[in-house]
Length: 239
Image 1: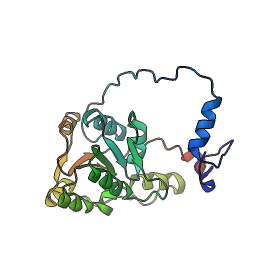
Image 2: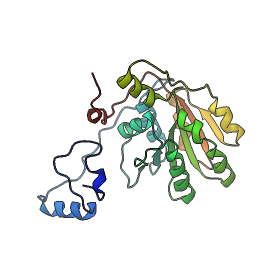
Image 3: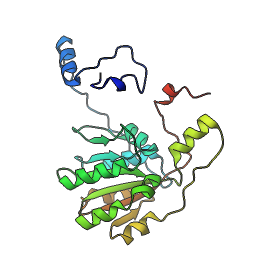
Image 4: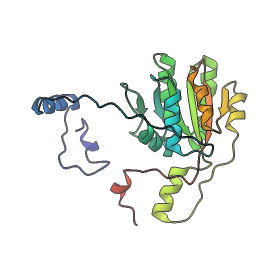
């Protein structure tokens, strides 16, 4: 179901495609469904990951959510960290996750997060990769200037890893897509931004304190970690 015909079947094959107003369509479907108890069952407690850097991407998301305020809105940039967010975040509040998937531009998640954080209605955390931070990271200077209370977390694996893994899968061995070594913590502090590098799971407890201004948290990520990408079934990659 989509209001724009061009988006129907774009990401995966569909059996029935409706081009219409989604709200009206869902209301119509709901009228035809049998009535019953559709309350959400209680979620089983999940054991939080432990250990130290380099982290697995999904472990970082789970530790973030366990230690940040429960009302936190998560905004994601584009990259493997987006897949980690989708697979590791437990969504329980309206509009708890914000993504810009239309064009899928790297850097878009930072701008969205800044706008939401400037509204000051809920705590906001932006999830970004080291490649995206190299592209648009100077926006932290704007956050410092205007006192925008935004938590920016950087998945630092030293590569454009989604590009690297996709290229390897389609084209075979080639460019490493390695990024220059950057001390993001020193760089953030040079802008006047509170900045930290977390090296063990216990460090995440420091996030329970609400951000008073912009803060930058860097996580070393295992560059060899892979994440499920549902779109691979559509692209028909060679085995």
